[in-house]
Image 1: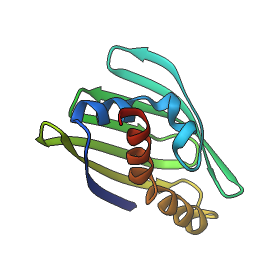
Image 2: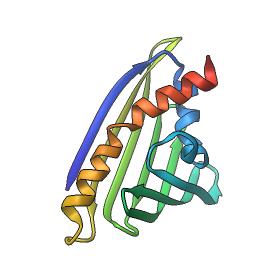
Image 3: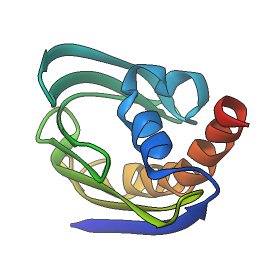
Length: 143
């Protein structure tokens, strides 16, 4: 299994960052590699999302299950498509009224041993851009 984690303090409220991350259908507008994300079912704070992430010449299609716990936590899991295991945890802390520490932790394992090395490298490279992309998007929306 592979892991990636990053935290970043941002000059936005916890509610603003939670709302931005929870808006999965907008990901294709600002997240590198996200080609589509479409909510196919919504039951309260539970979402089922069809997604396509483009990693070089490899489009990865998968369905994820998302649990929203506003404004503190978002949990995404998938055992579909290229993922034997995908577990994404977002956590939002408020050290002040005008800032938020955003934590992202991703654990994953790909289902194809044939492409494991290449896809893992590409997926990790994509993950390193995620918090930066969310911060840039927040600046566009909230400043």
